[in-house]
Image 1 (cartoon, rainbow, N blue to C red):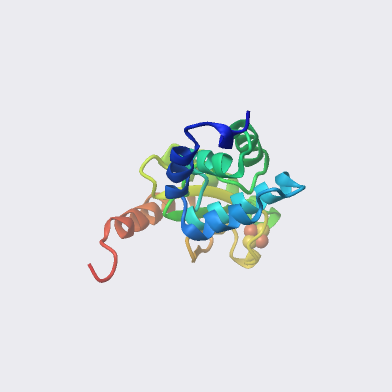
Image 2: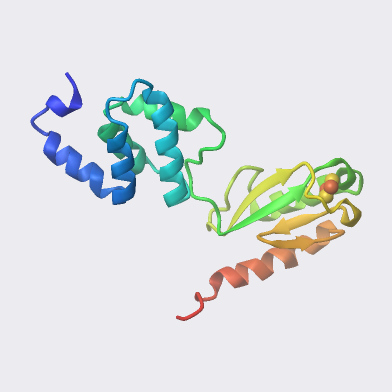
Amino acid sequence: MSVSATDNWPKVEAQSKSCLPERLVKLIESHRGDENPQGALIEVLHAVQGHFGFLGKEELDAVAQLMQVPAAKVTGVATFYHFFRLRPRGKYIINVCMGTACYVKGASAVAQRVQQELGIEFGETSPDGIFSLVSSRCIGTCGLAPVVMIGEEVFPKVQPDQIPAMLAKYKKLAAEPPPGD
Ligand code: FES
């Protein structure tokens, strides 16, 4: 039996629509009856992530209901592709360059210190939601190796002992009220 055939459908539909902005609901409705629901699903999930920054459980459930696709299938697609995020990203992205030039100049020790200070691995977000940690293969400033970026700021020739102060600066920024408050 399809979801729409249940007596409960109007309530489920209204609840699902309330989780998503109207623009995304319209996008989903434009794909109803598509021959290639998987292609549409990926497009919809991209749009949902673009709006919220990640794919939360509530939003995934809403997509499943409104597209009338099993929830397991939606979750399967969301977890299969690495470009989908199931958790919110931190306020600041810490990007430790692990490319050859940076590696040779000690990027591993720098990365270890960041991981140790935050208690997270690459691909994770700190429990306070301030930092997400990623690595890259080269950020194009090899002459400054080893390089770390926090947000848009590039830190050149980083030594592991500098990490606590770098993190403290951004923790302080994160605690400041947004401009205009
Ligand atoms: S290898 Fe790190 S900036 Fe190029």
